[in-house]
Amino acid sequence: PVAYLDAFGGYLGRLEPPMPRVAALQRAQLRLAERPDACLALARTVVVAKLRGTRANLRRWEGPAHDTLMARIQHAERHGGDAPNLDVLRGHEGAGAAAYFEGLALLLPENWSFRGRRFNPPGDPFNALLSYLYSLLHVRLVGAIAAAGLNPYLGFFHADRDGHAALASDLIEEWRPMVDR
Image 1 (spheres, helix red, strand yellow):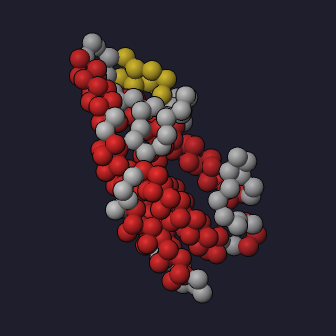
Image 2: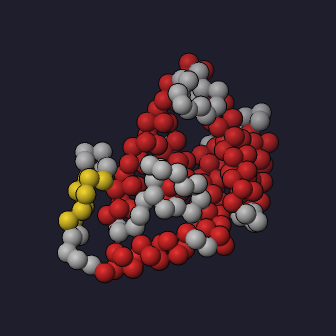
């Protein structure tokens, strides 16, 4: 198959010969997405990897709140890996992300005016930059997922809603700390 992407990696379409594997692959994806245990296992892996990445980003910093913030992220990582359901996992992911952005705010120069993660709309230059970079990554992931023959709108961690590429949102989580760097 040949996938056509725009200059930013956004998926435009695909040219391919008739291939039953794509239908079988999407059926397998759907079956997996309908199994709560499978969704939870995949989501745990993504969230734990994201939280490990955030701790790696903050390791370069030594400050008065460093140990407390690192402990909060590590707690979220440890308990996220054992979360009994997606709602609890989302809570651990959110708590870890809040601690991470609190630490990130302490790392940035004061003139960036970054006080924590804000979006819709981003309230400062750093949040605007993060939103822009996350959007670029999301578009590329949608293209890569579609090019692989999977449905980018059928995820396992983010809730389904019309027009939202949930699988791309799921997969972006692990990459966010690398974007932040």
